[in-house]
Image (cartoon, rainbow, N blue to C red; front, side):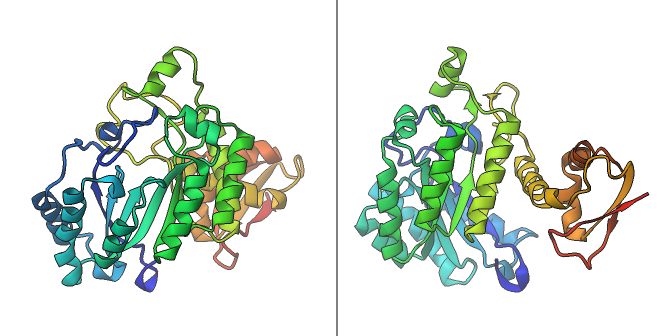
Length: 344
C-alpha cells in the first residue's frame, strides 16, 4: 500500500512467451494478454510509459511501478533484457516511477542478471511456481521442480528482492489435498505476496487437446472458489497477502470460444472474497429456523462482501439460516468482520 492508504499504481508491460524455454500445456499468453509475442523495443516501452504518465489515473502518491508480465524476464536474450531495463531507467531517474517488478521462472535466476536488475531498480520478482507438486509440474510441462522454487525464493531473498509466487490450482494431476500441501509449502517460504490463477482450458493449448480427449477435467467454478477461499484464508492468516485471484480480462480472452472450459468468471476475485467473508461470519449467523425474517447490520466496507455478486451472498445466508433477509443496514460501529442480525 502506498501513501495515505492509496493502492499502488502498477503499469503493466506484457512480454507474452518471451524468454520462455518451455510452452506449458495450459499456456496461451497472446490470448490471455491480447498482445503479440514479438519483441518489444525501447520505443514501445517509451510509448506505454508516456501514455501512462498522461493518464488521469496517474498519481505519484500511489508510488507508480512498472511491471513486466507474461514471459520469463530473466530468460530474455541479453540485448532485450538490458534494453527493457534501460528503457525504463530514465523514468525512474526522473521520479515518474519508483521501481520495476518482473515475473519469471524459478529456474532461470542467473546471478549476473539479478545484479543488473538491482542496479536498474527492480524491487519485486514474481515466480511462476504454479504448484509445489513435482508430478503436477511434470504433467503440465513446466520443466522445473518444486525444489527449484524453494531455491529460487532463497536466491532472490539473498539479493534483497521482494518475492511473489504465482499458483495455478486445478492443473493436471492436482487435487484439493495436493493443493493444500502446495499452500503449506508456500507458507513455509514466507513470500511477500501470492497470486492464485485457477487453471483454464484455453483454445490453442495442449490442455485443450487433453480436455477434448477427456484426459483432463477442470475445476468447476464452485470448486475453484472454495479452494481459493481456503488458500486465501490460510495465506493471509500468516500475513501473506493474496494480491490477485483469477486471470484479468482481455479482449482476446473474452472472444467467444477462447475459453473452452474451466472456472472462468469476470468477477472471480470478488466471488472468492465473498466466500472468505461467508466462512468468517458463519459462526455468528442465527441458527436455522431461529428467525423467519431478519435485518442484517454490517459496516459499510463489508456490505459488498455480504451481498456478494448479484446478491448471491444474501441468498447463501437465507439458505443457511432459513430466514428471509429483508434489509441490510450500514453500521460502522461494527468491526470489518462484524455482523449483527435482528428479527423482524
